[in-house]
Structure formats: C-alpha cells, structure tokens
Length: 97
Image (cartoon, rainbow, N blue to C red):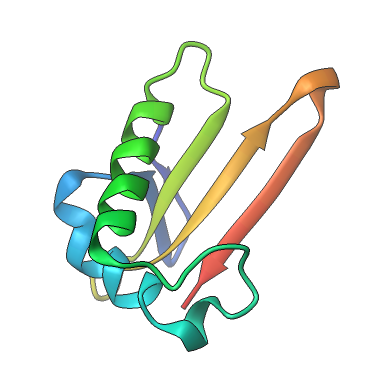
C-alpha cells in the first residue's frame, strides 16, 4: 500500500503505534454520532487497527485503510477507507476529526 501526500496531508497505512491517536477520536460519542460504529472501547480500537493493517496487506488489496496525518503537526487526526467491491464499484467512507 502506497503512502499518499497532498500539500497538507499524509495518508499512510496504520501502524500498531497509532492506538492512542485513533482511540482519542474513536472513543468519543460526539465524534462518531453519525458513524455506524462506536464509540469504541480500547479492545474495539485495537481490533480496528489490527484489521486495517491486515487488510492493507491483502493481495489484491480490496480495503485501503489510511491514517490521515497533518504534515504541519505530524498528528494522526483521522482515517479514510477505500473499499473495492464486485463489479468495480468504488465506495468511499471517511471519518475526520
């Protein structure tokens, strides 16, 4: 899985060390009120990160889970997921804090 960059952002694969940053937004009810999941407890956040890492290593990769990092602060502040499904449909789901 490639690392993608814009002028302000870095989109990179998740790492196990991302737990604190992910849990900081995924465990807050206000942040996830319009999401079909959450708020997460610690085990759910750890499972999400491990699942994201495993899926990013798929060959072919059908679910791209990117950690969104602000270049200016080097802070992980969101995630975005690209899902490839049958009939070449592309779905995009994202969460931003």
